[in-house]
Amino acid sequence: MIGYVIRRILLAIPVLLGVLLLVFAISRGLPGDPITVISGEFEPSPEVRRSLERELGLDQPLAVQFLLYCRRTFTGDWGKSIFTGESVSSLTLHRFGATLELAVISIIIAATIGLLLGYFGAKRMGTLTDKITRFLCTGGFSMPVFWWGLLLILIFSVYLAILPPMGRGGIENLILPSLTLATVNFGMIARLTRACMLDVLTQDHVFAARAKGLTDRTVFIRHVLRNAIVPVFTFVGLRLGLLMGGAIITETVFAYPGIGRMIVDAIFMRDYPVIVGGIFFVAAVVFIINLLVDIIYAGLDPRIRFERRAV
Amino acid sequence: MTFNVLKEIMKSPMICFALAVMLGVFFLAAFADFVAPYSYHEGDLWKMLEPPVLEHPLGRDQLGRDILSRIIHGTRPLLYVISITLLIAVPIGILLGLLSGYVGGLVDLTISRVIDTLLSFPTILLALAIVATLGTGLQNVVIAVGIAEVPVFARLVRGLTLSERESLFVEAARGLGAGRARIMFRHILPNISGPIVVQMTFGAATAILWAAALSFLGLGAQPPTPCWGMMLYETKPYFRVAPHSMIFPGLAIFIVTFSVNVIGEALRDYIDPKMRVR
Image (cartoon, rainbow over all chains, first blue to last red; front, side):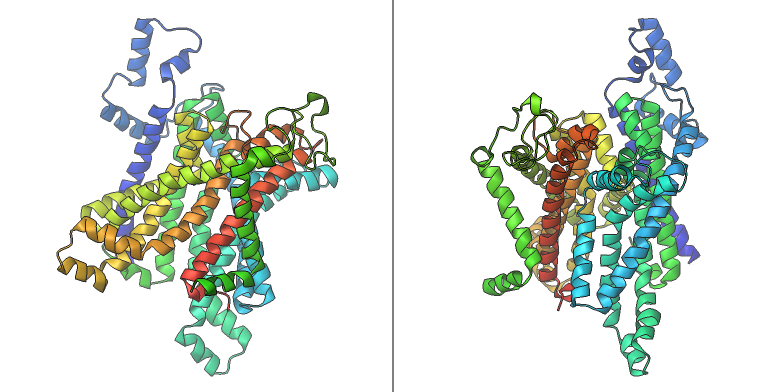
């Protein structure tokens, strides 16, 4: 196991470097150079421009600039927002808290609904229950998030007036956004649960359990669900990671001050340090969650450790 | 065989519905100018946000334009989004996946790390960053979504290639002296094309949703292009007073995405009978 963990971490290092490189490339690729952005409407004199370039390290070769960028990233010096002057690292962390809250609650809802639907879909395979389940799941992941969010606002905030349409505060602010996010995620979880359970159902140990005379209920819960749930947990973990940045649209619809909303606002205001810091932070979180999920998966299912050693 | 497929399809009302929707989309896109009752870019400002009436069954938008006509014309940007996204994502994804899976070694290690890197970014964030770099507009949105879908295809093709690499027919081809390129494209690719086609349908569905989402953020087409996501973006400020202006374009996106996904699932069930509902 320790060998596997070490190998997995070693393989992750180039990915982290790739993330850094890509974010660095994005920061260079964004239209307009930083000096013009900093100086605003005033055209800086050549001397000012040169001194600014030296200060920001822009006179160095690209490779050196990249190394400087890496150092700044790891020392937590992510610059300041051009507009508010706030430190990007503290702004990002603050916003991240809001997104984490939303993502965790919505994934719990989605996993609960998804597991239940998947379980009954597999147990009553081919019946009307199964068909309705499939319909609901496909409907869920075909849903345009922004439209669904607006519809929920329309129903619960405008017509029924029982839930606040936007902002962050108490638990009531979280209900609509987390329901919106859960709707687009439960379908995949349910489909995977169903598929994994059907896979396990055909295995010998299930026949053995049946032959022993165990009840249907015990067979399904003890033998099938427990074996099928490992890949489902992995998937839920990965979805949670992707929700960190993937909640952008939901956060926009509900004016929820999360990290995705922060990045979108920054893109519209061309607040480069915030864009770059935010994108890197999200990618880093996804990266760490993926790594953890892989390692936990290998811990739960020892077969994984020996598969594809070369990869 | 064809007959059996048809019989299978007819048994499922959901698949019939999905196929009808897609045929409808193609028909409307081809004949939008004749089918649409009104112009998609000229409206009556005095009647802006008018709720549905008999002459305008889906009502009017914020500039008094007929929403039904705009939705009908919107099938064109929709097909544009699907086709260009797939034209970008599929060939690049297949090439990377085949190289990585078949050649192996350092090539595989490099390509796999690149795929892992790209997959560390939530797709919408990756697409957003690309649009921020390229500039707004439907064309750049489509390019961004296309690039963002590349790693999905690359990873799928790599996995499929790995499982076919050691099979007998590949060994036979190698024994007959076929080169790497020939084996990859003439022998492996046709044998793994089924799952790729399935992924293409799901890729099309996600492309619709992501392109609409980017349009909804205001990064998409320029007015007066009747793109569905864009229509939602434009009418969002008025959705409390005129919900119809927001409901119908979104419903159109939902129905089409749903249909594409249903077709994709039907294809997958057909290829992999284990998943079929018996």
